[in-house]
Length: 335
Image (cartoon, rainbow, N blue to C red; front, top):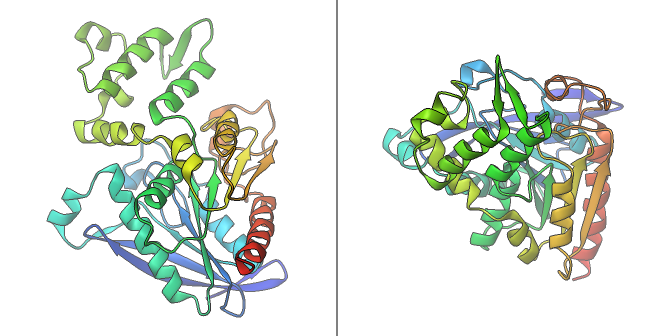
């Protein structure tokens, strides 16, 4: 179907990706002529999202938010001349129950990304280069793939609000930033930050949270997850993004919003510092007014309210990515 996007017309094609015993909904956004030099695979972050990047209760999410960032970014990139493939983590169809059950580990996410790269390369006529754009948790996923599978044909990496710290440290930072006088408000409960930190440390080490501590904690959170979910987080926690990006031979663009309260802006600085000494091109695109999904927010807006905004994601992000890809293309052509 054709979509009016500014003065341009872009085309969107529904597609599917098959990996790990599942069939995954995807959408390919294309420039108006259906051709592109660059293809960008948007690797989604945490929680189950639909193909546009919305988080719905029916997908098992503990919250509802409709930021539709992946749709916005894909269409904006297509307006600027690149193809962009986005895909869901929720609403998938299980085509092999046993295979699907055996592939619920963090590393298995890389299989989906690799298949997405193959899918977009075969679907876009004349495509020359492919970039992975990993959003939030999708950043470590993309980095892990690039470090493990050199056969996957990827030419550049884009970090979209992705962490440098390990995931348990990210979660501790989120809670610590909301604490007042060492006390954290969680729903109707107020608990000492040190209690939360101790419980998180237990989960991180694979230990049971002491019963007396559980009584002081809310009936939700990481400490209440099933063991498979806790193990997934421990596997994610074992991924050192700063180390992986330091050794990555691909050109890197680090995109970060200054009002991100999910992955705080200092993570982008840590990723940039890790690239020092790496001869591959590295740039940072920083947007002081943008949150985790690249919506414009004021400094006074409550973090939860900011997270749930459903306005259009700022097109300056796609413009910065497109300009960077054009620059990288010139370097690739002269190699």
